[in-house]
Length: 126
Image: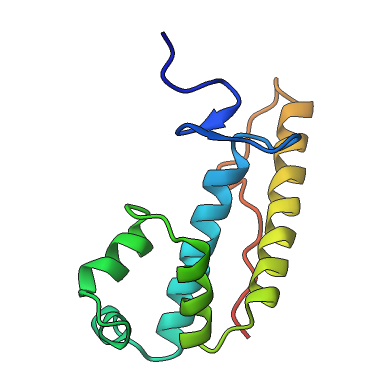
């Protein structure tokens, strides 16, 4: 018996119309964006973790994708890094749209060579 239904990611149901590749893409995009914001703020993993009274390994696991953020943790990280969470989510959705467009182009031409770096553009931190 299949442990996870076809319409789920690790047992979590997918919303109608959600593509299974969207979740890992958004997770990776958010991890990368928050890591860049931490570095831009001049914070080490240790210092950021200490501000939450957590071990450095918590930040490392989040940034490496070994631990997923809850919504509350994401909001608190945005606050600590002085990011507007609405802007972060808006940028994430723009990156997802670009990622989907690239995926559509690739699937429309399955017999051509795929570009090596077919990635959605990641907006720089301003």
